[in-house]
Length: 301
Image (cartoon, rainbow, N blue to C red; front, side, top):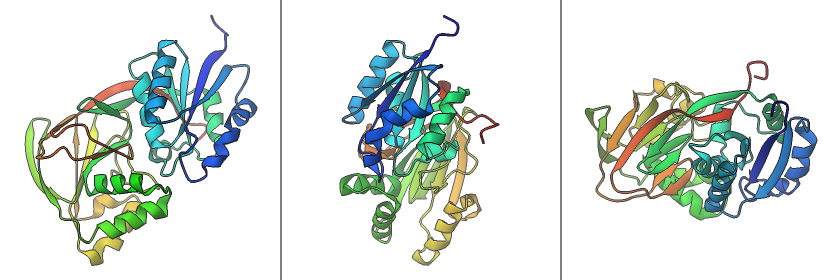
């Protein structure tokens, strides 16, 4: 009915991010900063990624208008997987560690400001990507990238310095692997430290691995990273943080709609910041404009 309130559900990950204790008061913030004339607000807490997926799936089935992930990239991934293919609209309140998707989309990390974006109801269709039967929104990776994600998850500690310390420890002894890919039908062989399959431009923490990535162009950006000498690593890190990694001789970026990557083992991959196993051989495919998401309007940016 025209003029009726939109049903909005916030799925809150209570343990994501460094300052997870702040989310105990999130329902009050939502009621304070959301326009109550537009929305009928419900908040619920997830107990795991699988639980967030199940809540989102049920909400989409029930016809909830807007489903919001309150957490990091992993929470966003679980919520999107639950609602994908429905008429529900996705939104994000970034309260995670790296917050790569939010940083890419210029969604503020301050809760009141990110809630204000929802009030504006600027809805944009965006791409998603599937690897085998798993969906992701931001970025996936194999090789060193996946190893760091696995150790980061096991560490039990969040935050940039934990992530950086793990990468620093693992880097000297990590041996690059040989990869054979079929990229939009064309074969490509490379020996790489890691390969990222990017829908957005970064891992999080403003470490930008695919500077020209677009989330609505129907393509993924494949960033193939060779291992630099240890003495050159600080320079490479500087390029990452300055969003200029394409200027390095150790990276090659290719745009594609579909990629097949055979492997000899079912190793973990980094999927929106979480280490997961999806099968030995990997098939990546872009799903163009398959998700509607609330993003910044031009006036808000």
